[in-house]
Amino acid sequence: MKANKVNVPYIIKERFLSSIQDFSIFNCENFNLTKVILRGLIYKFGQKNTIRCYLLWPSLIYSLVEFAKQVIFSKSKEEIIQKTNEKEVLLLDIGRSEYDSDMKERSLHFDNIKSIIGNDRVLHINAGNNSFEYDYNLQFITTTFSRQRLDKSQLILVKRLKHIYKETKRLKIYSKADLKNIKYSLQIFFLDYKCWDNFFSSGNFKSLIIINNFGKEGLIAAAKKYNIKVIELQHGLIIKESVPYVFNLPETEKKHGYLFPDIFLAYGSYWKKFLLKGSEYSEHQIKVLGKSTFNNNKGPKLNKDIKIENKNTIVILVTTQYNLHNSFIKYIKSIKRKVIENNLMLIIKPHPLEHSALYKSLEIKDKILITTKPIAQLFEITNILISSYSTTLFEAFDNNIPCYCIKADNFENYAESIIETGIAKHISLGEIPKLNNVGESKISKNEIYDSFNKELLLSEVN
Image 1: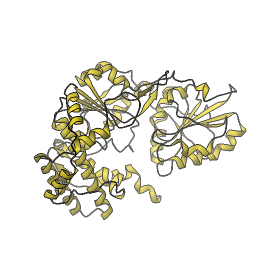
Image 2: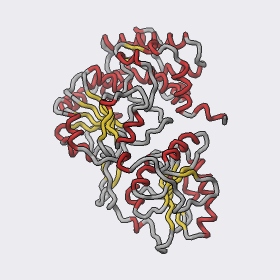
Image 3: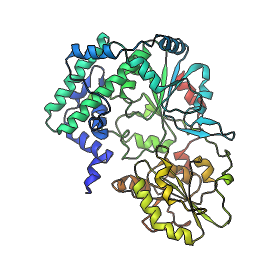
Image 4: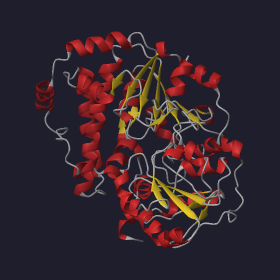
């Protein structure tokens, strides 16, 4: 096993879940904090030192610290409260976007959702700084509602979190670094919970729609306190290595709630079947919505940026993965000479969370290009797709594009899970993919992406 292999998220998850004999030690009031402990071990918050951790301080001092942090946002808060009273559905966006044919930025996940539910019923909060329309930035909401005095129930929760930390420490299975990460994760959970507890206390929301539940445990706990239905929209890949999904947790603690959404809306039946391999959802909680994302394949003309002079040119699209740039750069360098010498064009589309500058040194005019154009438009000129582990591979398969997977260092199992489905083949360093060298898929296309069900969406939020 490579030295960094133990830091791969799904391995941390497997080791953590197998090491706990009694998950009740993470019970807290009406919910269980197993996911919060795991998140600390994966993201190592204690090593980042971006916040001061005062969770274990005496309650009186903790309360004084919270009071000292308090800032008066009366005007902003009153405006938000007035607006929330008029809304029934809260959308929490992660800031992903696409551009329409008029070069207007649109929310990738919620543009269609808002138009179906109705803008008059929706409050749209966005974690990004996009130019598309939304009501409030997430940072503004957290600043406004987290800096308030602790109420009695929140003080009780702080005491319970301290108790959970002490019980976790008594297990004597974690290093000092791990315990620090767990402590920070518990505090981040509390700060999130406090913010949304304060926010929901003045609203009339019936439903909350989120993208990716992992890391939103404070939000989910607060929503459940106010009987707000939590709905997760599928936004990406679900494989056995996906940390937010397919947990095997004991039924005995389900009554406390593991802080998963109430409803999961999947792209298709394939994803539903996969999720049912875990214990976090029962069958009636997973519903097939279809793909609801904004999809513009007629946007700004590609010809302005990508010119293909020879109609016989084979266009290879490489969609990268966050934090795996070294593996992608290594592969591209290994085929660079062959791309130059043959009738090939390589288009690199960095992951939305990556900086394009990572791949800048690879560019060669008319041969190796970097673009951030929408994937639907790029598919129109793509002959072959190369990725690692991504729903892009499933989208390409749906568009009859041959797919290949790079086995990135320490993430070989992720790619192998895709290859096992038959929608893609492995590609090695120095290997040029072939148009006719793709195996038979074990999945039918209509299992991956069902037609979008507007009626289902409306029934879930009504």
